[in-house]
Length: 215
Image 1 (cartoon, rainbow, N blue to C red):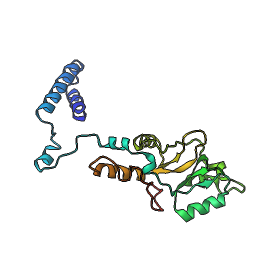
Image 2: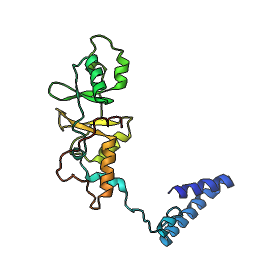
Image 3: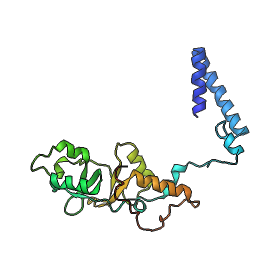
């Protein structure tokens, strides 16, 4: 598709003839279709094919549609209580090396998300609680949701992780889904010849390393 558009733009830049756009589009489209029928490889892949290297035809990202969030989420990621003090939050950041936490109430229901920048803006004001500085309107994922859909949610936001919560009004925090979790799931799904991520058939969730939250 990109060479198709590039050819049209370049030729128009050379001719500056608006009347030639439609014939040009038709000619490029026909030549592209004929080229695909005669040879499936492009000038970028033909050398690889000659060396015996063949690229996969399927859209690889689609493999994540068959992987559930619950099988790749991090269930060891700590949460912080909404009534915790700024001092307690500072200590939690320091001791864990994390850059953000889900904020929960006494029933483990999601209240929001707090990150290092929230702490920096608080300026250590006395009497400030975590719920006073955290972001309350956050994107979440469900455990039975596909990683593909969760990735689409992450892709549109400047965040490295999202909380995984139960469905329904309670929204209890079950874990955290980070970019590293998605990359690992993607890698395993691509490498697995059967198309299933290792452990996706009811295996427990992956346990992440202690300092992976910066992804």
